[in-house]
Image 1 (cartoon, rainbow, N blue to C red):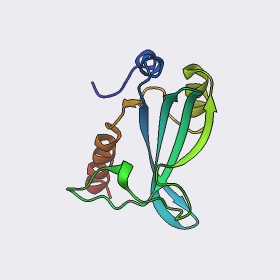
Image 2: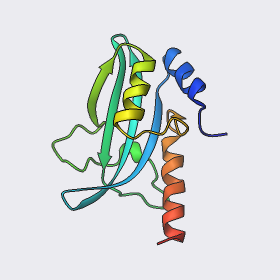
Image 3: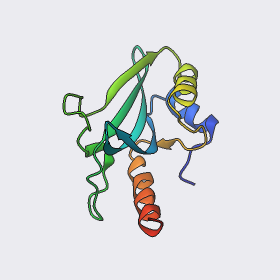
Length: 126
């Protein structure tokens, strides 16, 4: 099973592991792109990164974490939304204010598989 249960997502953060989620297609100022989110534990709390990137994926290049940002002035790793003291607070903010689904968190690196599924679905359902 690819997706973490809410309890496993919380447990991963408590163990110092990053979790991620593909949030789907977006459009900003008429420019299409993709959005994904990462929660990364650190010494000062859990940092929430939100990435809006160009969809430059191909059948052989699916690493959404390497896609260029939609905004050329934005950091390549996404923008830091917040640093919260606890994993619970970070998950709450991500799920209630940034549209993350509590049932769709994945371990670090698996967000690329989520993007691949998105590509497959959108190719078969234009």
